[in-house]
Length: 212
Image: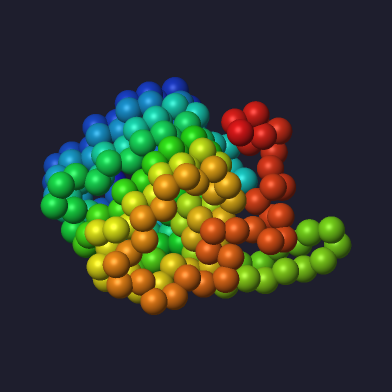
């Protein structure tokens, strides 16, 4: 399977990927706005970049409500599941081997309600991001892994013994969090890990606001 091979297939509603597939290609389902069911098989090891959206402002997928991540997956590339605006639930299969979660992984998953990260997780990668606001230019270092997950109420990282720091804006804009279970060996929570002091995440489209 090649990069963006199903891009723009707006009538596609279900995809069952083969068990022989080791890597999910970059942008494979970008702009497949109505995909409702996605089956990932055991044997998959890598989730490519921006599977559903090539940028943060791309048209969001509005159909997929649940994701089951196979235990064999070891890495999420940047923006792996960004812009799944209807996503409510993510399940990591028992025995998960996920080690690396790159930045923007679940950015703009507005309806995601809870996340329990696997014990195997070792790294939350970061990026230097730039943006403009009110005539000014800003730059920040951070992860933004769950940025704009407005409905997120439950975060469980208690099994993540290898995570010693939570990067800047990892959970930026997650204003509804009620339960937060931190890694047992955590040493550093970086600036604004759970906040958005410049109000960047509030610059939402009308569609985003309607989901709050």
